[in-house]
Amino acid sequence: MEKGIVTSPYTFTGDTIGGEGLKTGVRTLADLQGIFADEAAYQAMDKDTLAYRVESIEPDPQGTPGGLYMGITYLAPGKVGKEYFMTKGHFHLNPESTEFYWGVKGEGMLILMDEDRHVWAEKMVPGSLHYIRPRVAHRVANTGDETLVFAASWPSDAGHDYGTIAREGFAKRLLEINGKPELV
Ligand code: S6P
Ligand code: ZN
Image (cartoon, rainbow, N blue to C red; front, side):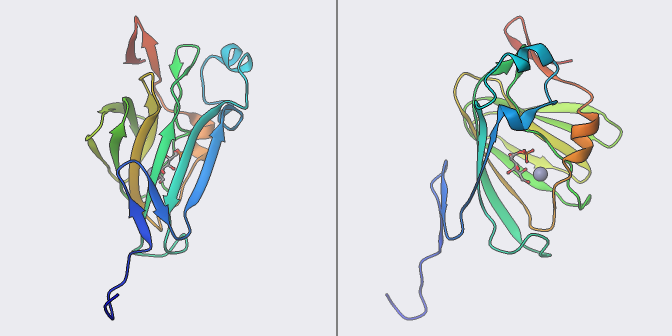
């Protein structure tokens, strides 16, 4: 190859990323204990069921100011009672940090909640782009019957506050009512 011209160590095909230092994280239903409303339905399910997998490229150490990360989440279809499979959801530890999500495959809902516990949702479909503003908690539910694939890019110094959502939850839940998703 010509001097000074190199190949990027990372790849992005639309629904996969790869390359140097690719990280993979897996969440089963066991990892989502306490987030679904219907505890009896949750207890009746196989806790080894895969809920989602996240693949990410994090070129700089967590906490590096000015860095950017990119990840793809594969969220399985399914419900616990009437509630769709969803990600744990989080605020960022650095409250000013923002994030982009975009829909790649399947159908879902990005559920957002500000610090006053006001909740709203944006429909996620292939090609939808979602800007998550500072101080807004975010989680995604799969409302379809295929794996929901979405990508995200966030600052390397955003950090994740899972504790607040684990303790207090979101003020509304996305349930299937008469065959359609409803925030209740
Ligand atoms: C990271 C970004 C996503 C989520 C992933 C899983 O800032 O928001 O990669 O980590 O969608 O969701 P959660 O709430 O379990 O981190
Ligand atoms: Zn985030």
